[in-house]
Amino acid sequence: MASNMTIEQGEVNKSNGNLATISLNEFKTVENGKHMYEDDDEEEEEEDRGAWGSKMDFIMACIGYAVGLGNVWRFPYLVYKNGGGSVRKIITSMPFLKQALREGIQMYYKNRVLKISPGIDEIGSLQWELVGCLAVAWVLTYACIWKGVAQTGKIVWFTALIPYGILTALLIRGLTLEGHKDGIEYYITPEWDRLSSPTVWIDAATQIFFSYGVGIGSLISLGSYNPYRNNSLIDTLVVGVVNAGTSLFAGFVIFSILGFMANELDVPVSEVVSEGPGLTFIAYPTAVYQMPLVPQLWSVIFFLMLIMLGLDSQFCVVEGFITSVMDYFTQYKLRENRTVFLLIVCGIDFLLGLVCVTEGPSNKLIIDMDSYAASGMCLLWVASWECVAISYGLGVNKYYKAISTMMGFTPGWFWIICWAGTAPMVSIGIFVFSLVDYQHAKYGEDYYYPVWGEILGWFMALASMHWIITYAVYLFLTTRGSLSERWEYVTTNKFDFELIELKEQRIEARLERKRAEAAEDLENAKDSNSDSIQARDNISTPPEYENIAYVSENGDGESLSKM
Image (cartoon, rainbow, N blue to C red; front, side):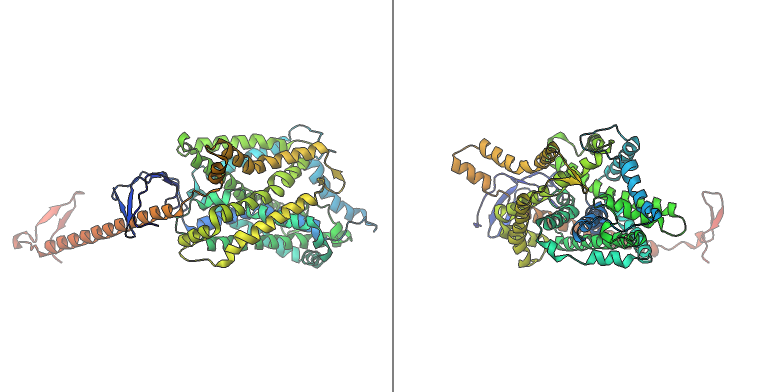
């Protein structure tokens, strides 16, 4: 940087963790390494975005967001799908009662709760009890976040921690059931020959992205409420370890129960239930039914746990979306009208969810959405481009320097290798493998989606994937200049961390100055108060007034005489 420079215009959008637009016209010169300001004492008007009450509020929000149904629902069924033996027909005769134990639960789940139809093309009417549940879910989501992250940070302490107590109780009960060892052995014993299948790696990678919420944008939005100086390395390690540990922990719960069910039915663990997302809603109720005392009470507690697991993930996703919209479209004053805007968003999401609570194909449609829109290649695609954009668009060295400045120390070369090499290579590699080894979508063992159903799934996937290329093409076509100038403009990073750091240093200096002034005022007030007390003590009472009584406000006579 030159010793003398003038910054005439620009914007900085980061201020103490809060986005605020400020003019850089005030930056006058950089002279001999010192920044001079035209109006240093003048404070900029900054938008109040809110902030986390404490660092632990943010960590708990991230844990609540990352730890959800993906850990206790999606992870176990993917393990069951990829970790078990080959599917075989049951050739062992079983007593009717034991068969009913398994089929009863599964039939109730499929035929009564979901009312699954023969195909995705057979659409029935709305299931009003599920519509009511959907409405309650969105009402709770709105109630949890309508006041902002300060309120959200307190709620997640409850919604994120309570499920661990319930899972622990279910695990303890599962470990006391006969046959649990078989289920756990099935869970922790890999079939090495299946590692050659790309499907296993695709499922594993997409589960990681789905569980951590990478590529969705919510973590970025939640992190924007942190202060500028923040040790994000601690946040990353804590959330990562807790999330992975929760998935493993939930797996022990599920498979201890599956071992018990296999023992009761006298079949291998791999044949207890049909693979699929419904695995969790079949295995967990079995454990709840085996709980001591009042199983109905445990049923209520269990489903409250599922609600909390889904709720904190859901309202963090919504918070991430509305934060992005409010920060980008500041001209519409959406933040000032947050409650109304959030109500509209929740209402629209509720209406969009109605298609998932119809009779017939709703569950098959949910699986279609999970395979194409919510995870799979979408997250791999977005995450790959995020790594490429940061490492090679912004510049990995520049990014590393900025991260180090914010944290106050250098995190180490390991992260540079991950950002610039390992992460994009693995993500892109798995994405390519998923295309090469593409398999037609199916539900359960024998239902394959029709061609139009797969096309619908691809349209849902492209709804989020195409924006990366579409916006790049749009920016290139609408930029003025020659082709080479357009290309340079599109591919050149314009984000200047030095200006942000400059602004942050100024804010910190101003805050430090205010703290010093406040401390000085407090000290002066103490000295003034001390002088007043000393002066009062030095005033002597004339002898003739020492024993005069006076009447207080309540009419009681009191004496001034010394005791």
